[in-house]
Length: 306
Image 1 (cartoon, rainbow, N blue to C red):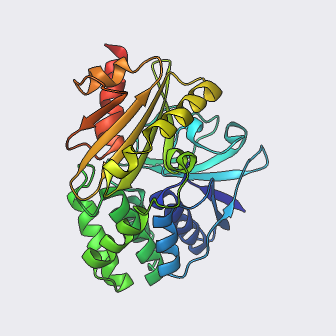
Image 2 (cartoon, one colour; image 1 turned 180 degrees about the vertical axis):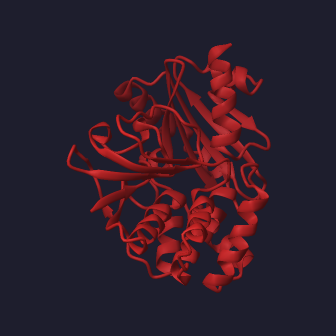
């Protein structure tokens, strides 16, 4: 039985891609089970509830007896404990390739699209496997989430085309459903500071620099910024506990496509250099920036080598 999972601090694409990949592999005669590496956020919970799909079981570690499929990530630092011991069967992702190695050949598929679900859609077609309505709904949800309803610069024309086809199969009106999905994820009223900082966070190694980039979506940046003192306390605790060089917390306004970032650590200079800005009270306004993958990580990597 293969174990399928996405990255730690899972978002909608990573949870649904594990479920969808398990469905595809089982249809192909490869017994598989989807897992999650963390708690669901409200957006993902909304999608699973809407399409009546069970939440995957929590996975905390793997070992040398496990055969695994990685979706929506390939960096070991973002994966499950023990990942270096497991046997990778396949990787399907749409991010940069970093920190991955394998002693055996495997299926490795990385495509420059906005969402893992878009690649999985192509895989269903290639294998002539019918997409069930609830699976189509989860895939459409992932594309809406990763593309901010087609507003993100990571969204390609093919992502949009696929999402509209999946919406037809799932029998949803994508603009209405998509906005409801995104709004579900912006309700931060009952989240602790720690939850806000971990609900969608990834650690990146950039030329020897350890950077944690966390992101949340909202319709009220100022409301989040009122909690800045408590946010900074938790960020500093994480920097000390994880030996981070940089912690960047990105608060993204999904309606106006802008972000505010709170930045701490010994290498805050990378953020100032990457975005040609000066931090004021540990914060910077980032107009037009919504994508961690395309608009945050690449300029930080460039700044780390120059």
